[in-house]
Amino acid sequence: MKTETRRTLFGAVLLAGLAAAAPLLCLIPLFAPQAVPGPQAGSTDPAGSGTAAPAPAATDRPQPLDILLWDESAGQAVSLPAREYLMGAAACEMPIDWPDEALKAQMVASHSWALYQLAQGDSSGTAITVNSAQCSGWTSAQVLQSRWGDDFAANWQRLGELADTVLYQLVLYDGQPAATCYHAISCGHTQASQRVWAQALPYLQGVDSAWDAQADGYEVTIQYSAQQVSDALYAGLNIDTQGNPDQWFGEILWDSAGYVDTVTVCGQAVTGPQMRSALSLRSACFAIAWQDGQFVITTRGYGHGVGLSQAGARAMAAGGSSWREILAYYFPGTEITDAA
Image: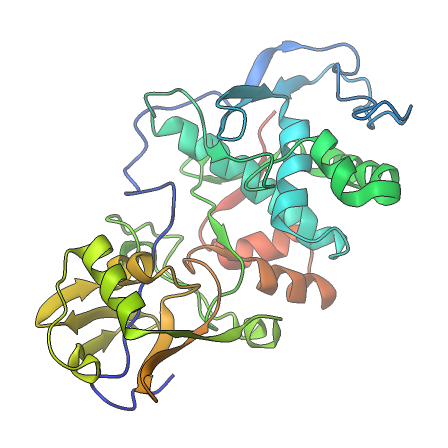
């Protein structure tokens, strides 16, 4: 995206839920030590229809650790078998009609990401925060049945079968779960972790993701009034706007991936993550212009831009790439391991 004028472009990046990516604070076991001789007790008949959720096959293998989540909608911590977490996470993160290999890549990324977050030592003891009612991060079979209706049984069965194929696979770096974060659509190149958080992770330095330009919602334009922008800048950044709106935004600096690094706002240097948060923008790759008495903002991409591009995963899967190839591409330098 080219800079047209010094005053018309700026942007931001922010990943909700991770203020800073600190180094691993502890090493965690990847699987529970005890063997489970038969199927786990799973979700069955979520709405009294008589349709049982698929259960894993009997196995003597150690089972993956349960995933402890904080569910905002329930206002409490929820402990889930890893298989159930993979199914509910994939259903929230990707449309159910996307290719199998994309859904499997998402499951492994979600699993590894949750274990990475657990290793950060959050005081709550939970891996991540979700909202099951809004299908954000993870949701339950009950919620999915209300969403899918008559298609629930087939969709849930499919998710269970996909989860069974990747339940024991994780993305590791130096023997521990990697920070396999993900976002909907990049701006055409994924972002380096240090542009969003404090730490530069070697496997999160950005890769080309040109497929994303073909994704629905890649480029979106919105309009804000001067009052809306002024209020947002004051509330989010404590910036009190002065003078004509067409003079509020000054010099910008872009990073190599195409996202805005910093922007001068009313004489103050503001980081991209701060600006994206303040204006609630879809992406940090955007342009803004003062036109006909309002701000016109065009964004490219959706999300923080770090790690796995879900649109890119879909395109790679449609082109014949396996879930392993997708994850190896977006997280170079990691290894995908059966850790049991």
